[in-house]
Length: 476
Ligand SMILES: Nc1ncnc2c1ncn2[C@@H]1O[C@H](COP(=O)(O)OP(=O)(O)OP(=O)(O)O)[C@@H](O)[C@H]1O
Ligand SMILES: [Mg+2]
Image 1 (spheres, rainbow, N blue to C red):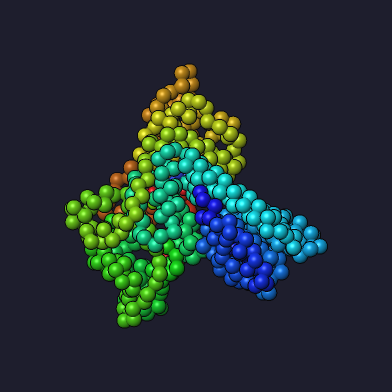
Image 2 (image 1 turned 30 degrees about the vertical axis):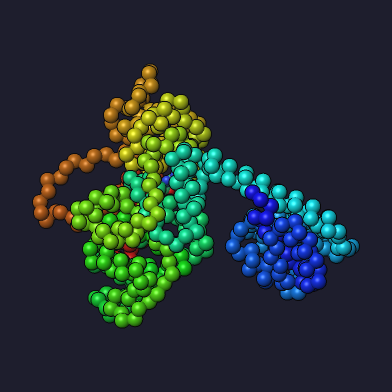
């Protein structure tokens, strides 16, 4: 990279000195941005681009040390050279402690200035090379993702480069591949990270409530609208709106969403005033969106509006050894939660994990590890501890406890209820059947909700959420 492509931010409030320094540096082909105050310096640093910073500690509006601390706290890619008055070596030492790269004591020669800045540029250049190598060669973690497979490196790179834009991202992938993790990664990697991330599931909300969920409503607009309510679009202002299971969106709402995307404005249900928001849309589906378009279930014009940056999450079976990296991570987590001693998987168990085809992807892997941690103990997870069909994939020779194609072993596997002869008046509403199953499981696990959740193969938060909803509706 040519020296001139890393600019020098010169923060010096004495105009005559600033002019002299700038002259020296321009002669060496540096691009110089000169500011006189701490506030202007912070504004220049906002873009997050690499810079060499020449920082006078005595600024009219703040101590230069504050600028340094900000650079340090935000881990900005800057090499800071502090300029101190003669005799204030103590301040220079403190500055080094806060991450300054070097210091210059006034008065200094043109040579000293030029050499110090040249070294700082070189150091930044090398740091950038190391950074890009790390990006190319494999990150084992990226936001909520675990996995160093090549397939996932490609995903991380797309998120890196798409994050800063406002363009809509369309995430596809089988169930449990991490589409929600990906949507959050895009948000957290973007400049919108400090603003809200609002997720709504287009498949889980009843059709007639969906419009109000997205766009909000005004009091009295329909039965039950007892007060004005902000929708997801308004709450996501400045941040990211994640529309999960987008293909489930009803046709009339597809039209409304299209209008919203085209104009950036919407009207809450029952309202008359247009509202404007600035947000980034990320959407996801585990269907094939083009087929939905071809079969007339999804508007073609909306599809092309949303399908700007596509990200496809590969199924877990195509991610090389990610399955082991993820399994080990969750084993450590769940063993700690369940107070079990597990440290590792046996080679046979690892082989079974590696060769299984994981139709439920990472979510299924999480459930498998959770079940093991709930039902067993020891320092090594053996093949026979894995629930079916994994534990029965390749029975370890001579292991008598290996179950055949039976369900998950262990005392807590729920006993099958004898099928009761059913008369129509004995039929319970589905929510009650679900509630009974959950409450029975919790009771069978002595009130341990994570354990009950693992055996029901749902997440503990689903149980907590459902219980809250039953409570609110007076059903508990
Ligand atoms: N690469 C990964 N590393 C670690 N955990 C992951 C990874 N991918 C997904 N997960 C975890 O797996 C679970 C499922 O992920 P997520 O909900 O994002 O999947 P999804 O693709 O949205 O699934 P669905 O289509 O069923 O909604 C979550 O608990 C998530 O934290
Ligand atoms: Mg999802």
